[in-house]
Length: 423
Image (cartoon, rainbow, N blue to C red; front, side, top):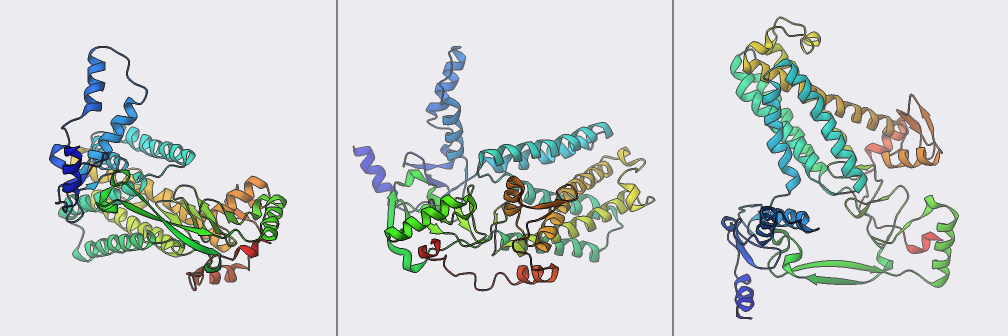
């Protein structure tokens, strides 16, 4: 009892940059990450004694590692590091350096890496899990390619300060656009007439990361909405029974979804004009900035690839240098630059395909979510092997669709429809 009382007293004191509150609610330090590891000791003891491991042994070890893997922070104590950000940081430089050793190794690595990324994507997409892997991969790929451009390509000559400044500006604009995209996608807000009370639930500090919740626990506000009168509820039920596509009431978010809004099962929120979930939810508020991020990244990447190939293979044409560059593996620095150009080309090709699909969808005024639903229900016309999908529901012509897309952010912070609109 004294120990718990002392811990409670200690938690009232502010945390230093290296301290944090662990999952048991106790105060800990990043330097003590290897101390008192009962789960790890038990697993090692069973392994040494050749005894079977417990059923939840692995999950408990992962939970312990994710709780203790932290970095010092300036305020609020040490921040937790998501385990999904580590594979790109550790594997990408190693694989690229291995691929630069020999032509055959380069073919194996550059073929296997996209396959592994796609496999991980489909696994996470099927489980509807939330991960920082793809955001970490995108940011680290951009940052690491820029670092190699500064340390390997620029010192070789052939790249002037103007070209370096152009690449730097492209990287900075891409990051700024990505930061803007990561902001609110346009959440569906409850109608003021439907809200009768707001309840705040408090839980212990151990339930969440104290870097985001504070020392005194976490408070989560839940808006309680009126379900309307009996006739309103009956009308709502009739509408939901008539067509599965007209279900406007979200039982999870407790809001009425306006047309074209959808519930993201990864983020757990309803988003206006939900398109898809990428590194974040892409909806009505950030869809344009998402397209601008793709466009800026592609332009910067294509320009950087051309500068690298011009430096490594000055005698070859840009289009043929990527396929045939004699003597590039005679020097390790040239081989590394050539390998990174190939890696950037693969990433650029994937994002170019995504951008083309997005532009086609905007031209036909459909979202990726609506495309999937229409293809599943066989209610849309598909052309060019599914590249063009036209639902014919919201289309106003090419110019009208683009005009609506470029102005759809105006008046965004309007609440969702009233519950009486369900009838």
